[in-house]
Length: 385
Image (cartoon, rainbow, N blue to C red):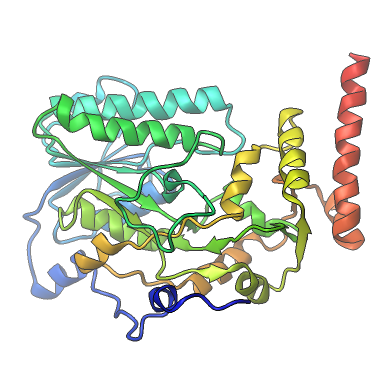
């Protein structure tokens, strides 16, 4: 592995590792403060990152009250719950009295119908922004992904928050996220007085299921010849802490969040113990496109770019505000490998036990031949219809 230039090496390996900062809630608790802070509403509060953030905010001495909104009731007993779809205009009444809204009701599932997913994500964000302005909320926090920067061979390492958003809509959900970003930029002009903060995490880990986490469920790590991957992760706990900073107005604007530095592909292979399978670009991208087109895999070919080229972010604005990640890339990768243990995926498609055993025993070459056989079988089936 070639060594990065001195400037890049310094960015990856700072001489003095940052000390994790206390969370805002911890510092308030130490001071014996009372809840005189903002009233924060969280959408998508019943599960995933929304549930974790709701619990965190409800336990904070810097938060006056938490309003939890979802289509079902979650487990946080200290929040005030409202059960409704975020696309319902009635949400404006539920937001009255809130100072901040953290909008986390997004569907980025691999198995969701793309048209339905876009309709939910875009319409939901539009409704929340409009409702927040009508209810007198002064800040909305949105969560997209660092994927909006795009994965490109000429990306700087790391990217600043102000870097141009060069992604296309070819990867799972990225088109939706780009539209959410557009709505975020437009909202303050359409609703004067409304502040919109956008948080963009790196590869998110912690009970998540994405094309990028499934990459580590394969019997071999697919590497496209001539590509230059760089892996940066973000643990869901660190994302929660960053969202809390934004909700407490300790930082604003466009915020990137992730572990400090990144891992080269060779480091990932060494740490994971999973060997690579290297393919020419035309073969890898062509196969991915065909498999998705005939419905055999949930991931479009655009997802592959994010395993080929870097999209590492600096997170400088959060760092300047005092936030620090508590997880390292190595630790998050270990967590991810533990989560996906026992799962088997080929080209983004989950395999059953029998197929997984065959693929694992046969190795990468036969696995590829098996994938090609699936393509041929699907084509024959179509001809018979």
